[in-house]
Image (tube, rainbow, N blue to C red; front, side, top):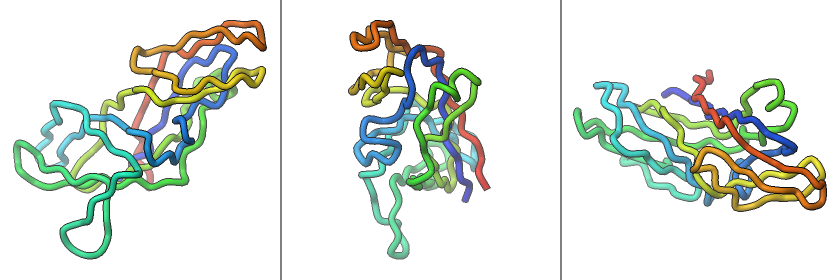
Length: 166
């Protein structure tokens, strides 16, 4: 069992607190990424969708997980379990420093998450306090105008990494 912390970074112009719409532990927010089988190295062809609100019982015992998937090449089962309470929004300060903010912790058995895909359902606020909700980052960036602050706002250069956590 290995734990992977999904971390995100971006260039935030006149913005702060980039996070999923309902916060980092939003049960309806979908995380999309590819999975690499730890047994045979096969990479999933399409992105896998995982969210805190979706759980399935494990075949043995009383525990549950967020995803059980069989490798198409070696037929081994693997699981991905999300661990809430560890994520936080990406701030302006972290963005300026080029730092990554932790978003979600995944406990993986048999798989390694790779290639996170940014989608829709994000929120961010301007440095003047204007809230932008339902932000779609699937195109790789976001640009708007903050009427209250009378300035352009932008999200660009989106990046993500999965760090092994002990």
